Length: 249
Picture 1 (cartoon, one colour):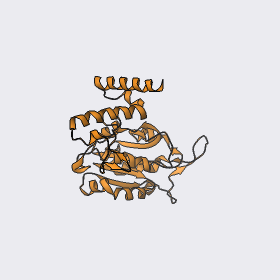
Picture 2: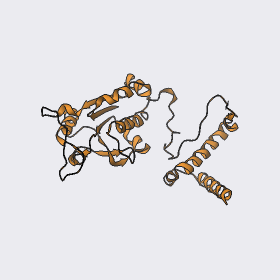
Picture 3: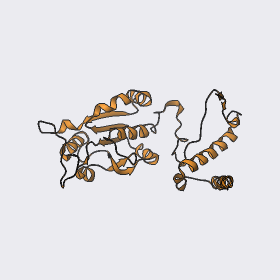
Picture 4: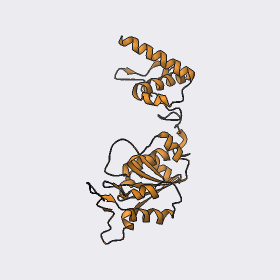
């Protein structure tokens, strides 16, 4: 899978790409990341990439000319792959979108800076606008890294021999992941639940499912509205809620 990233600060990406899973994926040629400095396509002597907004207001706006020129010179006109604009006003990025994007072999990411983008970039160049949360950052570089990381790990082979994305939080069933432990079985007087050490896989799987349901209910109850729940899941949640209500009466 290829990522083309367009940014005013492409040097931000290299340190993260040189460690851990993404580094190994790049070495194995499972993914490739190409960064491009938008400023290289600015045509004036100062390599200007921003200007004041029409109608007044604070901050500076990224100009359309260098952004269009950068993307089209690398990807063609129209671009040959989906072009994602990272912006706080975009669609909220989640695991389902990550899975959707992982089905592509090529993605482009545009990172903003300053106050905002010229609207023509959004309307006529980007094919999708994504946000990683309801807050504002100084640029789109961190969101681009988040998107690349979340998407890349879903590609075959990227996680190696121990691939385990099906049980991740926000996986296909829509629940948060169950709690997990490792050795030692006891640490500072805190013990791993006995069911997780008894070797009974069937019991452990049932327990994990219940813990995922409880954790989702307590931390992200909104997810339950869209989660892929069985009749047993719903019965368990109803009983659990009743028990919790009785404790507060």
